[in-house]
Image (tube, rainbow, N blue to C red; front, side, top):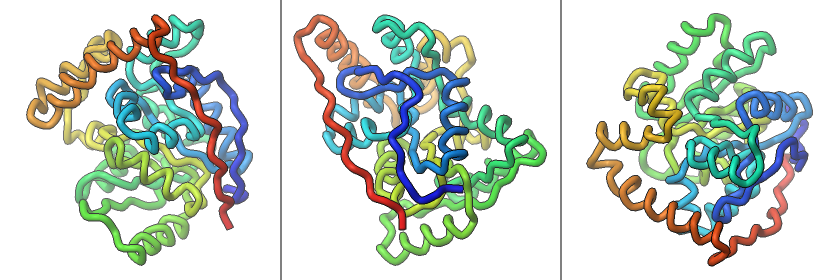
Length: 273
């Protein structure tokens, strides 16, 4: 369990993609990093990042800084993997949120990690936990909670923190969608005793079999966005039809030297009492 301290140990390069520091990792290195955090009693959060999230960081300096002080920002989208290769990091591979969830669950069976699922609609985290425990017999799930859509009061939020800490999880999986989950993790990292918080958004619905995932060939070819747009056009059209072209323009400006993206110094983190 956590010792109550933040550390800044880095086990991988960080790649500047239009001002967002993407971690130069693959699934194996991501698992090793999570292991190290839990073993060493670190307190870190993980942003699982795609093109949409990188563009959202251009609209909010606060959100960009949340990413750039995260313990790890995994390349969830294939364009981020390809750009990492172009920048000289050929070992980087996609660390997709739903795949990371399965990989960590399987990996944790022998290590006895304790999991908490926070997020999703009513009944979704419980359904997800049951399906994962069926798939991975012996998986330790110590709690689930689906927050209301409205903001919590200060006292309600304090109660949630106490409830989660009482269950003593090693990993808290956060499924609130971007950027809500990133704000939540950054706001709570100093108050939760779990060594690792991981924001995985739609993975809750995918592995609870509420929403369909894109075929693997579409995922690996960078076309997952098209599959999701076809399935949820009214909700996602603005995300993909505006953010994707904007991302291409911004990346070209960075590669051509038209615009430079400096990375600020990490903000100091608070110690957990």
